[in-house]
Length: 138
Image (tube, helix red, strand yellow):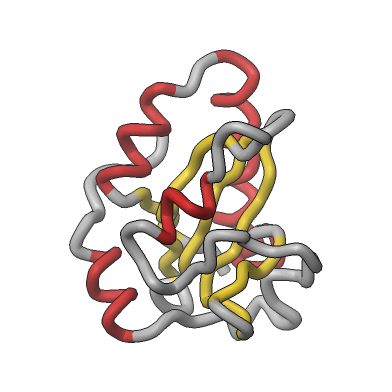
């Protein structure tokens, strides 16, 4: 199965700012998610005391890309950015969605156990993020 990966408007703008090795690394990750779905999307993020429907994958030294599985065939890049002592990419996304806790995740459990059953978000979060789609990653 092939998955369609598209960024939100905010993520597309951030992708456009990437250069060099970070841009190449993100392209490799997106290609893997297109082929393998949630099996290539890293680890589940937190939502309060529970798991979020969002997943995170690292790229480069401190880059993070956050994915949402809209349905069985469509993946949204919700957000991406740096995560280090000065910048918290999880807190940035938590500012626009209650689907994620500011701390992200301390125990990194796989995004999914079964690629045919990706994690889900609330219908409200899904609708909100789907309205923000703009263009293909490239």
